[in-house]
Image (cartoon, rainbow, N blue to C red):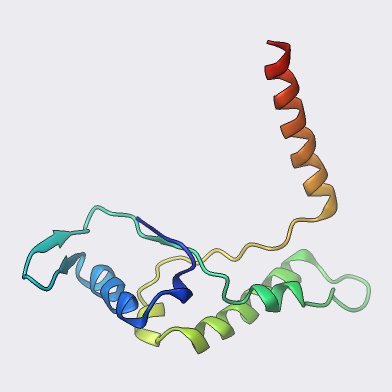
Length: 123
């Protein structure tokens, strides 16, 4: 189940998700039970995106990618803690922080997509 931009949902939705993540099931207002034990719940969020995009490159000579990624992860976690309740965040098993694509990476993606279209046009 995908919840896109979860931070924009009402806090009641977060409560329902907490029930799903804690118990693996959800009870509706009429008492019907839905089983979520074999369900993968994916949530996307833009919380922390501004902190990443506003981030400054590492100072000095040798700022490594891992340092930059660790800094970005810390900034995102700080904003997540300001947005969501601790009991909600503690139930999230994994978090993946995506960084902005570089110009070179975008060129490679565009080139690959252009080549795929050219292949289809050739038949």
